[in-house]
Amino acid sequence: MSRIGKKPIALPEKVEVKIAGNSVEIKGPKGTLSYVVNDGVKVEKKDKAIEVVGSTDRVGRSLWGLTRTIVSNMVTGVSSGFKKELEFTGVGYKAAVTGQTLQLNLGYSHQIDYKLPKGIAVTVNKNVIEVNGSDKELVGFVAAQIRAYRPHEPYKGKGLKYVGEKVIRKAGKTGAKK
Image (cartoon, rainbow, N blue to C red; front, side):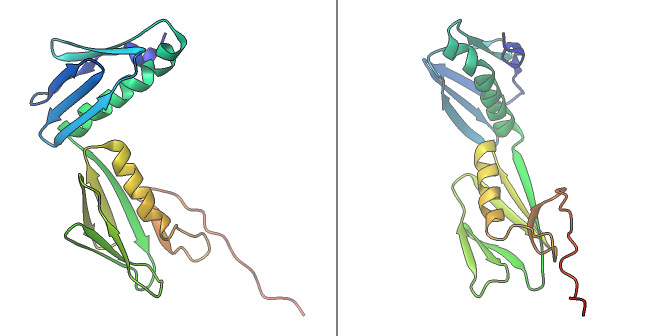
């Protein structure tokens, strides 16, 4: 029995759910998300909640908790959204948003233009890049792609890191003794 899968998902106000066969579509103030559920799992709407029921076979049991978590994240995403914050440190490092493109100057000889996917909004405040969206997976993926351009390094402390991430600084080499 899945402990996570047994919990019902409470529906906030202004969130609508449509279940047709194996597909689940959730609409809310922040957008619309849909998901196709595996055959071993069933999603049911009861009053102001969604229940996920797993079958007794191996596949149904293994996907029960995962499906419940994905549907729960969809409900949270369309009602309040998700946010990841990246902080950049370095001399001359800059970021700016123009339309659907994030322009990054991260110490390379060229500017990096990252085209934002549909459903993602990015804002830049001083040295913090804020990635917002209703799809948790897509928000995390975009933040990871942006961070991969210049990961935070432990010697000089330059690069991109998540806000709140701890990077242990290293001492580096010392002068050779004669």
